[in-house]
Image 1: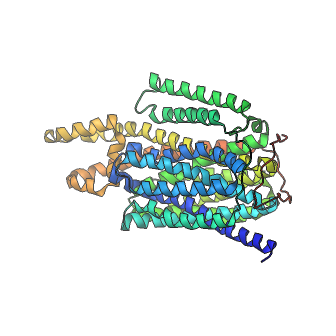
Image 2 (image 1 turned 90 degrees about the horizontal axis):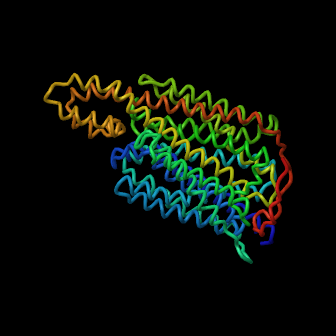
Image 3 (image 1 turned 45 degrees about the vertical axis):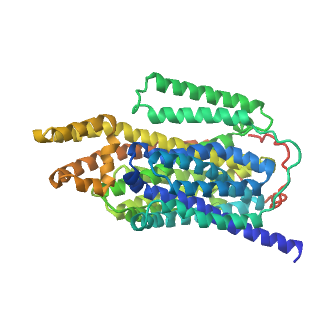
Length: 539
């Protein structure tokens, strides 16, 4: 077999491995989202629910730019395979968790592996193809991601209803092993010579800044008053950490996120759009299953069928968008996608207890259409705006800011839900509790204490049929509608906040310059040479 045939065979194996790896990572997110209400019902800790997603996103967000830099320094294969192994090991630990705290810790570990996986597929695609080919293949990869996301809720619902929620994590293992084998075979390694200047100070200050800010947003207004010394201290530490990060990055030899990139308007606004889009995407994926299972009253499997149309429409528009972008251009397509997403989120704010599955499905499909037009094009536009030497860090930055958006989105939307829950329960549930007879005073006192200290604990009953069965039928018949109404109002506030973020993202699109697709093919697409020194791109 000649060299050309070997190279083509390696590329084929690599593409198959990349597709499986993308399927693998997308599957995890959608399965866990569908299973989350049952996990909460089993392990408890509804007030900690958002940390199942936040812990994953927090660690993955921190790792994404580091992975992009390491891919440039050490080579694609070593970094990619390491991420796959870390992800699989943490998935096994998640399946063995005995309580919510353990599961959150293991999800954080899983996020380290996920943070490596997220940018690598797009980096390798950037290596392999020309500008116009990237548009096509990133559309296809967006479709593959969507396909996995369609299958994920179905598999997740079936696993939760038929087996056990632990298997939503164990299912990652066989898929991950296959992807690891193919990527190892198809992607050539490289030996690094010379010293590696790793930005330890940048990593540390980034973690301090981001974690402090997330903790302040999570605990503020719930565990502590917004003007308490604990919350103000966390905000101050966040400012110190993030300012220090900027200073460190301007002086580092190999910065995680070079500050000169922000002088490029295209870089800044594309990542800003990705940030706001991710807030909406994670808001829909995380909170719509709670609406369907807690308010409409469908099973986990049925809530998966509601999520599926969002992913199906995303597949279709991702593939179509990869071709359409040649005709309409990058900027108009991104703007159209963001406006469609905004329309879908507005419709979510109109859902109530009488909303049918068909109506919910149509709303989710609209959101998916917008996502499909935007997601693949953001990375494509960045890769077209910078040189090969900057490909790894620029591509990983796109994933980084989307991860930041998802992390902040889950935290902010979760905070919006928590802050409203106590108010709505006080307004709706307390008047009913005051009508109960004196012999129920101990239970009334317990429920009132929960409203004041742990309102999410009351909502947890809606996801735990066993708990409802333990209550007197007459009491449950009256309490459940009240709890559903309070939860519905809380989720409406979540969807409205998500809508605001999407609209701001659409406005940001107006500041983009037009970006042309090139036919320039990158050198050494599979075998990885050491990158040259990065040169700042022009505005």
